[in-house]
Length: 528
Image 1 (cartoon, helix red, strand yellow):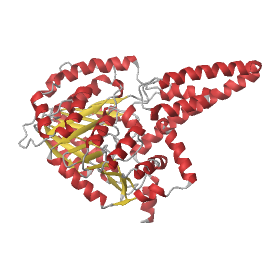
Image 2 (spheres, helix red, strand yellow):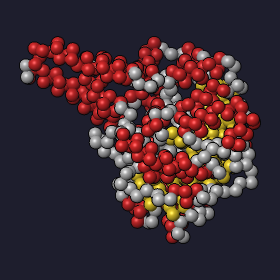
Image 3 (cartoon, helix red, strand yellow):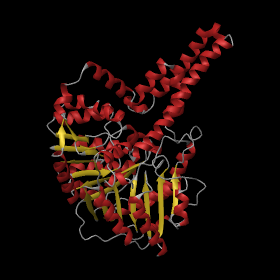
Image 4 (spheres, helix red, strand yellow):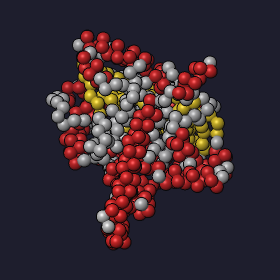
C-alpha cells in the first residue's frame, strides 16, 4: 500500500507534464531576458559607455514608455495589460525582452490569413435557421442573447434536432466513444490536446486499426506541447503506418516559432457526422482513474447526436486544414457534412461553439459572462483553475449581490501547487461578495462546465483562466432546455456533497503575509 502510494505521488499528471514543458520554455525566455539585462550592464562598463549611462537609461526608458503606451492602447482587459506595464516600467530591458518573447499574441499575419481562408469555406456550410433562432427567443428569452452572441461573433448556429447525453464520469464517456467508433461506416475524426500512448489510448487505437481495415477513414490530430512526454516523436509515424492519418498541431520550435503560445486545447471525437463527443477529458489514463496520482479524477463530457454534430465536423476540418499551409487540404469539405443522424428526441436547443485566438474575440469568456449576467435563481460553476479578470470577478459578485445562489467548485487536491495558490487568491473577493466556494475533497476536478436556473448549461474544454480565454483554441457546448441540463444540475448536487465549503475561511481568515503573497501571484497571473 505504501509503495503504491509513493508510486502514485511520484507520477505527474499528463497536463502537469505539458504545463511543466511550457513552464520550462517560459523559464528559458526569462533567463534570456535577464541575460540581456546583464550583458547590457557589462557592455556599458567594458566599452566605456558607462559615461553615457544616464543618456542611455533615458533612451531605454523612453522606448519602454512607448511600448507601455502601445500596450495600454490595446483592446484588452486591464487585468492582462497591467502586469506587463508594471514589469516594463520597473525593469525596462527585462520587461521589453519578455514581452517580445512571450507577451505578444503569438499569431502572425500568415497564420491569421491561413485561418481566414479556411474559415470562409468552413462557415459557408453553417447557416443559421432563423426559425430555430426565433423558437429559442420565444421559449427561452432569458438565454437568447447568449445564443445570438455565439451566432454573430463565433458564427456557430443553434440547432434543435440534437439529442444530448451527459456523462458525469469520463470513463463512461470513453466507453460510449468506443461504441460509436465500432459503428463507424465513413469516417472517424479525433482531436485532443493530449494523448498518452498507454492503456486507455491503446484500447482506442486497436478499434481505429480495425475500422481502417474495414475501409473507414480515420484521422487523429493532437497538440505537440499537450502530448509532450506522453508520446514519443515517432507516435504520428506509428499511426500513419497503421493507416491512421495523423497531424500534430504547432510543433515546438522555441525562439523560431512566434505562434508557440497558442495551443490546441480542444477535445473532440466525431463519427460519420452523426455522433460526436466533447468535454474536459483527454485520452490519458488518469482521466479515467486507471492511475490516480491526485486522488479521484473528476471529469465530464457530452455526446451529441443530430444536426449540431455538423458544427463539430467542420471545426475539426478547420484545424486539420489550417495547421500547415504545405499540407494538402480537403478538396470537398461539404462531402463530410452531407449526412446527419435523425434523432428521435430533439429536446431543447444545442449550440456547439469554438474559440479561436486568431480572431481576438474571447468567445469562451464572453459566453460565461453572458450566463453570469442573466442568471436569476442560481449559477453553479466547476473549473480546475480559477484565474479570472476583474470584470468576471465583479460579474460573479454582482450576481450574488442580486440574490443569485452562486457556487464555484474547484479541486481539493492540486495538480500544480503554484496555480492552486493562485486559484485560491481569488476566493477572498468572491466570498466577500457572497459567492460560495467549494473544494472537491476526493481529488482533482478537471471538469469545465456551468449550469443556471435549470434551463441552461455549458460543457466543454474552457477553463476559467487566462490561457483558455485568450491563448488557446477551445470548444464548448451551450445547452438550453435540454434534458442534459437537468442531469448536469443533479451531478452538481451530488458533487457538493463530496466537497468542503471554504467560503467563510477565505472571507476573513488570511494573514498579512498570505495576502501579500497572493497579491503578487495575482499581479503576474497573465504572465504564467
